[in-house]
Image (cartoon, rainbow, N blue to C red; front, side, top):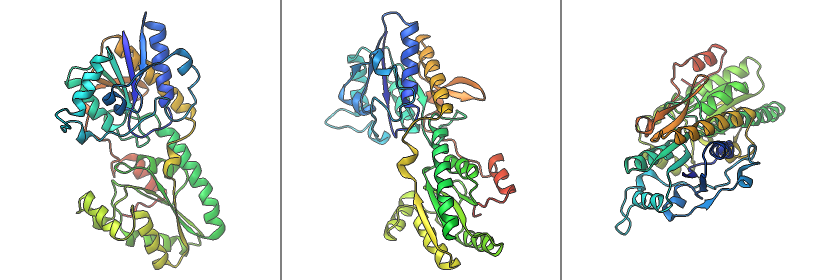
Length: 355
């Protein structure tokens, strides 16, 4: 059998651990197996590029961040758009067959899964794996890469807290999460943030200002606010994303964080600063949890392929590794419920959400 592996979308810790586990399982359980890596995600498949993966290529990458296969973003909307009479989807299917693949492993997030589902519909044998620091893939309790990002963001907030305390400042820490607030919610609670702002709970600037002012009246000298990059003002909910982007661009802002910091300082009179963690959350060594999870997911996905179970993606359910049909989860997201136990717990200990 011939297996192909690609990593698509944003990078995160744990990708190499998954690649290693897939290869180790196949190496030990499939006679005369051939494994090839496809560079730059779906971009490499569109171009028809691949190269053999040898044991020495993946033997010692368990703790290595990023992806040895490299990655890229290929917009899902462009997959079925004709370019010179041929779509990207058609090129990928054609190259899948030219490579003689019996199975393609696609490591990626929601967009990657949507494209993987298209490939399945065209007759390609695909097994997906749930990767994203956003933890927003529908049908799985957790994605690999998420826990490492939580730990990185938590440590960053811990460090920022010391300078906030030293200068009696209000600090807004912007954390990745454009659609879902899982990363900001978990890191915010773990780091003891005073307030957490996430996309699923639109916030009021007035409520945030009142919260900070009340803290100072209670003699708290500094305030830590964890802000998801996709956080939305209550007044912006009625607008489409493109309309919100236009308004923010007119103000010279890419996210709501800078706007909120400016208003907070003006209304409360307390020195306010922002810190955008950005790609710091994606890079670096995976934590032990993600190394274990990635290894389990990779080995399980390889077993699915060897058993002839295609058109599925590996998933976590409680303590079990299981799978979902790609057709059932593609295009769906897992969001934080404003009334979930974690949010209710946070509010019960005084963490504000600006609502």
